[in-house]
Image (cartoon, rainbow, N blue to C red; front, side, top):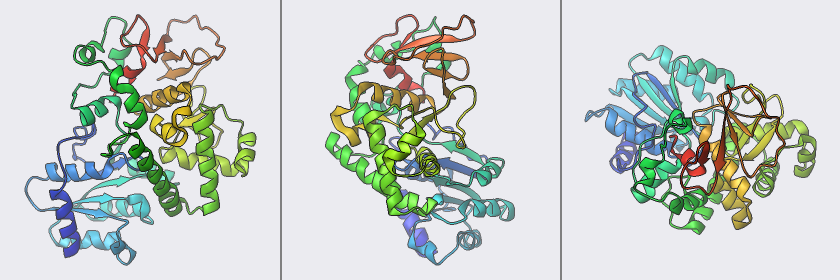
Length: 398
């Protein structure tokens, strides 16, 4: 325990408060259990340590624990939590929860049996424990942390600071929300760099450094997280890599599941299982039609890689612009909004707004009802024109 405290103290001292993610101000820690869930590499560890550094004042009552530390190969989380309480610790900041067997169950036990201890945890994936996650959501304040938005990228990399543009302002005809940005910078000067290397907050320099970093990140996700959480073998990992390459080259894809399974060399059920794992890990975007949200029992109606940096890292400059744009659009919108496919356009947002994509050749049925508002997305536009939204502006939603 003494050594764990020394590690925690060292990490805390070396944590910078210069750049904070959008969730930093949203997490009040008024709940005893706070959870941060997001893909690997998006900054969960830094956020945990920033919260610990700023929310507890100067008292030494917080302890950072990473559950992939070798210490937990022979010590239990519950035993460590009990010893922490005995040592005067009031807050545990627990990282890599998904790497620890029965971690979600243990959090429930702590909440129920250790009333003097609060927990803030981070996990890259909650695995297949959907029922436990539901139970935990009833007692915990849960947050999803994506990678950097375009707005955050401008702040982190270029020190251009702008407020979030709420979605309702974005789609109102009588507002031009992008003016607060255009009055200071030309966003298109930065946008392509963001699409290439701006999603992750890692401090790499240049495009090739980002490609190497992302490939190493993928290896850690597939060969580390997937093995630990889903217990899959290396042959399955190779099949998942084939799926990633197919989506990098051919996405966005309206998948024929049987045909895709044949391409990958697996069964239909195994393919759907792999897609579920990839979606939960933040590697792919998964869309359905109609009013329902994602249902892993049914096949997806549309698939793409989760964000453009993955496409660029896997397929380079040969990647189709439509693949990159649609991946960006879905990634940014899905953080706070429900997105479905629709025959009236391309994307149906919150069952109310239709976004039409100029690079899509889909045949549409025009709907005469006034309840659906239509917007065209303009990938190369600097300014808004009537009901056309510049693509970059979608990157200011969080």
